[in-house]
Amino acid sequence: MEEYLVFARSHSMLVMGLVAIVGLIIWTEFSRLTRKYKQISPTQAVLVLNRDDSAVLDVREEAEVRAGKIKGARHIPLAQLKSRMAELDAFKDKPVLVYCRSGNRSAHACSLMTKVGFQDVSNLAGGIVAWESASLPISKR
Image (cartoon, rainbow, N blue to C red; front, top):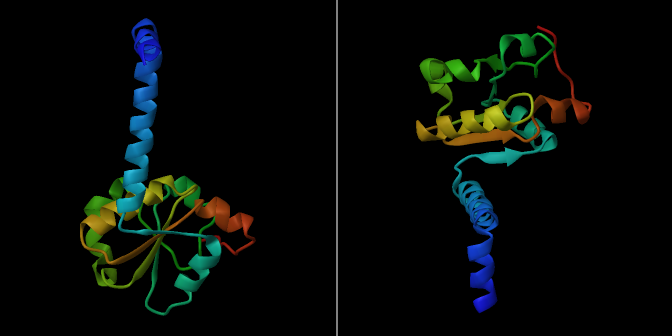
C-alpha cells in the first residue's frame, strides 16, 4: 500500500487524470441509466413511425435538412426547440421520434422534451446517418 501512496505523490498529474476519467465514466453511466427517453435503432424507429399517432422531429440545421429528411418529419432546429416547444404540445402523450445527423443533438432534444412533460420520446441512435446506412428512404423536400 505504501508503494501506491509514493506513486500517487510522485505522479500527481497521472492520478488526477485517472480520477477525472473515472468520474466522467461514472457520470456518463449514471446519465444513461436515469434518462427518460429511449435510444432506438433505425429498425425500431420504423415501428414507431408506423403508428398513426406518432410524430417525427428533425433537429438538424436548415442546410443539413436540404440534403433530405425522413418523410413527414417536422423541422425545428435544436437552437429553436425551447422557444417552439408549444408546436409539439399535441404530441406530449404520443410517440415522438427525434433525430439529427448522428444522434447527439437529438439526445439533447429528447432530454429537453422529457423535462417539459413528453411521455414517449425516442432518440434515433446514429441519426440520419444510421437511417441511410440501413437503406431506409429519405425525402427531398
